[in-house]
Length: 165
Image 1 (spheres, rainbow, N blue to C red):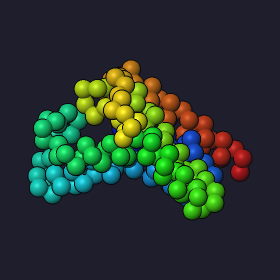
Image 2 (image 1 turned 45 degrees about the vertical axis):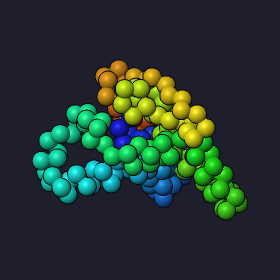
Image 3 (image 1 turned 135 degrees about the horizontal axis):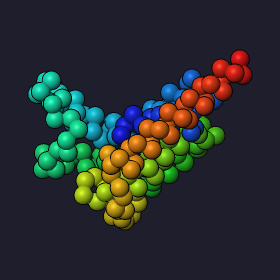
Image 4 (image 1 turned 30 degrees about the horizontal axis):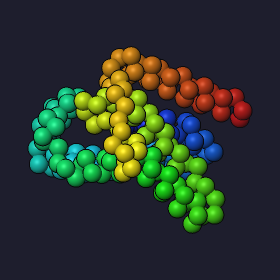
């Protein structure tokens, strides 16, 4: 799934208590991809400038992706790591931080919207190297319904808020 959709899904599912809750859930929704790919993306923009933007939308050569990206991706896309982090935060706060659920939702969505051909989701890492061969999120059968559902849900949510005022 694309990073913006992850944030929007996080916000609409677990971030509806208010603005702070929305933005926290949005942040947890984008965090797995932002941590894994953000430094590489920033580095390539710094090195290649705007020419780098010409290659967006195309799958990069896997050999051009540094090993650290795969390592961080394993950590941020693991339900095992998420469960541990959620439990630690719960213990420290003495109550769950429900907006963290957007992180788990990100992982679950990626399990089914990533194929084994490119960045399969290592959802049981470090226990097992299990991957599911899903339909890539860029495929119209996933992309179009995703955009439509987000548009419908946000319209319904925002119109409902307006009516309640």
